[in-house]
Length: 173
Length: 152
Image (cartoon, rainbow over all chains, first blue to last red; front, side, top):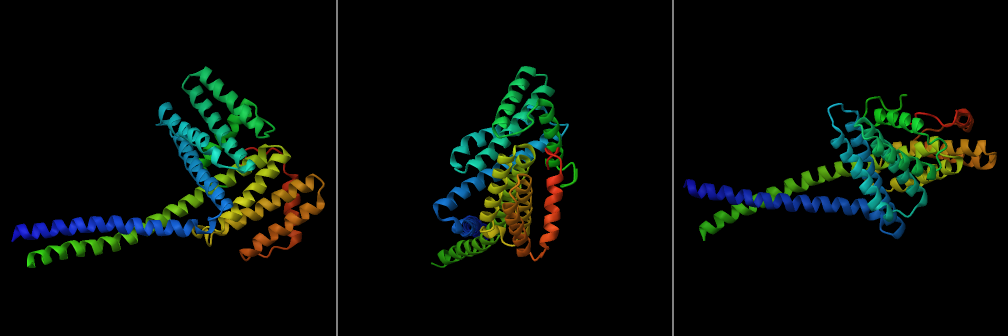
């Protein structure tokens, strides 16, 4: 009797597991189709690529700001998100066709370069810090920035880190 | 035969309960993920456009704001963004900044056009702001020192 009940329970769990997976996939796919339906044209597909890229870049931007503001995090962990962000920006930039949106991706790249320069400086790697800073300055100059001096960029990024890591209420200076 | 029926009942009942549970939780989690994605995309694009507006030259600032307006317009078509009034508020604010840029550049007619577009954006969320008040806001934005630091 016990054996039969155990086997019944096991089969029930197998069925439930398969059902859970199937139900989850069906429901999720349905919602994704509904979400993407208004963009089923070339312009819409371009928008979705830009949309996905900015969503991923910003989640990493906020994540890296939090790591930069956390005193317990070491340079290796701080570099991790920043390098990942640069990798994604570099890899997926080709999918974005709008020139102005590409400039915004460059701005994000430039800010990340400044962050990396500051991480390297804090770790005592001054040549690497200088390289990142020069890269940032070149990128931001290209993006039309009026002041791309090292002092200005550092000050700006420090303020952004505070804001993005939610150390300061949003919208308050 | 009886045993087979007994065990089939176990599988089928598990499957039905699993599908119902999966459908429910899959929907909830996916909806949450889509809203999360919408928040990150609009915040990221918007903040970077604002940084450009604050730090870049006039032409790049103009491009960034226009690009953000187009992006927000497309976002309003997303089912996950339905009812997100922040998109229209951001759009209205961007129009006001564009109006200030054009005002400073001496393009009065274009500046006025942007003020009207801002008014329309705010009207869509039920805020009927008089043109005079928006013009004052444009004058205030235009009088701000550039670049503003910090930009956010």
